[in-house]
Image (cartoon, rainbow, N blue to C red; front, side):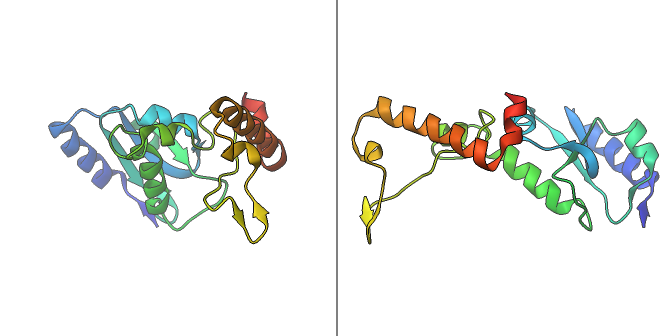
Length: 167
């Protein structure tokens, strides 16, 4: 099944009567891969249109003449673009000031600096012999930040080494 150009064109034109849109995004497996940098950029935009294909997608003329960006959430195929659209929305919305209670939390998440996050721990400091690293309970913020930076780099090298290609 391929979605025809006419209903998409009519819908987009009707929406444009009421708002200006920064981008019209088509969710597709062959689009640019969504990453944190794209989410950061899109979170600064005021109005976006997200177009979800289904099965085989949309008439290619839609992509050629109506779409300003094509985004993929990974190298796999789903039945439609609805789940990728939800993922894209969540990755953008959480960056908008006021959405998350602690805005600095979103800025320290994995991939903000192109590295994965350092390990995180809760209390108690000792649970059945499993210890939280001493530096984290030391109260020395400078040493804690240094430890987090070091662990982020170590974990990135181990878990996602290709991220270093983008540093």
